[in-house]
Length: 82
Image 1 (cartoon, one colour):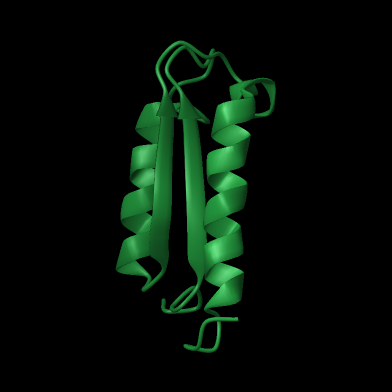
Image 2 (spheres, helix red, strand yellow):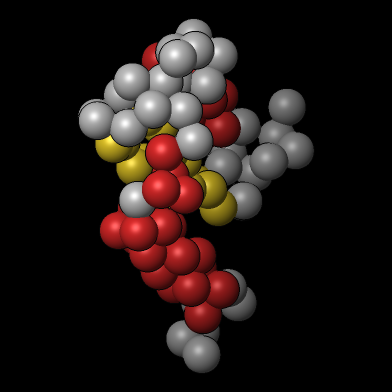
């Protein structure tokens, strides 16, 4: 299925997620494989080895990394810098 082809993604996982096979790093690695097989682009895969579930919003640096990546994608969305 190529429904996600051409889409851009930032993926995050917490090293101490309470549910590693559902929302933790093992699950996010599987999600990355699925997305790339579907033609999506993984722009960033942020791994916070010390965080628990929901850790992205508790770490300002990780949030800034994700937002900066989204900003880059949006600025170059039509192939020309804005």
